[in-house]
Image (cartoon, rainbow over all chains, first blue to last red; front, side, top):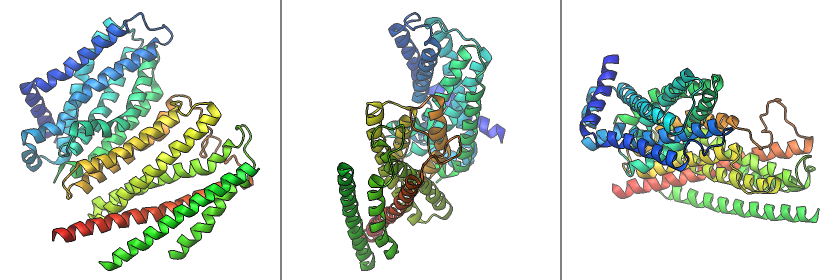
Amino acid sequence: MLARVWAVCAKDATQELRRRVAIVAVFFFAATALTLVSFAIGPFRLPADDRPALQAALLWIILFFAAATGLPRAFVAEEEAGTGLALRKTVPATLVLAGKSLFNLVLFLAIAAVTIPGFLVLLDWKIGNAAAIAATMLAGGYGLAVVSTFLSALVARAGQHNVLFVLIAFPLVLPLLLTAIAATIEATAGGFPATPLRVLVAYDGAATCAAYMLAGVAWED
Amino acid sequence: MTSLGYLAAVNVVIWVGLFAYLWRLDRRLTQKESGR
Amino acid sequence: MKILKLLLLPYMAAVVGAAFLWPEPAKGFLGESSRIVFFHVPCAWTSTLAFLVAAGYSLAYLLRGNPWHDDVAAAAVRIGLLFGVLTLITGSLFANIMWGSWWNWDPRESSYLLLVFLYAAYLFLRSAVEDPERRPRIAAAYALFAAVLMPFLVFVAPRVTASLHPQTVINPQGKILMDTPTRAVFFGALAGFSGLFLWMLSLDARASRLARTGRNAARA
């Protein structure tokens, strides 16, 4: 079972890497947003007291919008390439969803891995508790990946799917983003954000259960 | 006190209007349903 | 049924009248502004109820595949949105009197606004899926997925930052902080709004069913 999840993920990865445009666009978007923010604000424009909060919010805005250009592709790309039917016939819906979520999680972590070093340098971000930041990225990225993969399956065969994805995703991921920002603020200051992380894990669990139960409805015919 | 009474009266009138609208809609739907 | 609907006329008239005339305005609020509680909270309650009904009927649709359940779910979202918008408007009126501005981006206001967006997106999703066979399923999947994550929006997000919103009815002390007339009118209004909701829901769903069967008849 795990092998098939992995196979779906690997298939998506090779497909996206071969086509390149979409995946390059995601990282280009992250780089553009980062440059814009550091140009407009720079490290020293931020008052010292508000710095952790502003930096955390800016970081997550960059991460979210860069990811939002790539995450909804999970199922949309499948429909565009016309390979949806074959996949539906050969792999159960839950495993397809799991594999694509995994790919989206990897994509998010890659975006974070590229963005964070830039953010550290350009905005003079001082991380107090690196382990807590890593945990936040993992828990936040996981929730974002699962929710956006599921919603991608819903919009894949609807008209206007890009606009539609943003409209239906934003209210659902906002609690996740707010909590992730709260966790990042606390971790930046050096503390361990126990409560926000707990909320994030609860959100991840709820999203996983719902996506697991509804995978067949969303993806199969 | 009088202004509160005025507000109460206005709101009751609005409610009666809404009720009349819903009541008519209900009757028209029932007619259409039996007509089919 | 007909008698219950007819009874709603004098009942709600009495509740609406009493809301303005019977209880004393609550302490700690400017002027008569506390009376909005008899309209604002029932609207919020009704829209929450509507979204729960929508989730329930979406689940029923997925289990049974009966198109009537989809009619009811979509109707519940529409009515829920109507009451949700009324909640925002009444809340905004109160905010203007108490805090001096119509909109403050208070966490509670913001999360409620997003809840309205969430279900507006449901209707948008419905209209974007053109295949009539697939539409109810996609809509039901979204409604249920949204229902699972809704508590995070409604209960968690407003508590991440401090709010000016008055204590909710379900408050930390676990008590209903009201005197007797206030309580009577308040729960009377809750019951009346719920009844009104059920009526409006059945009207909307019946109208959808008529439109649907009419389309099928035209196609045959």
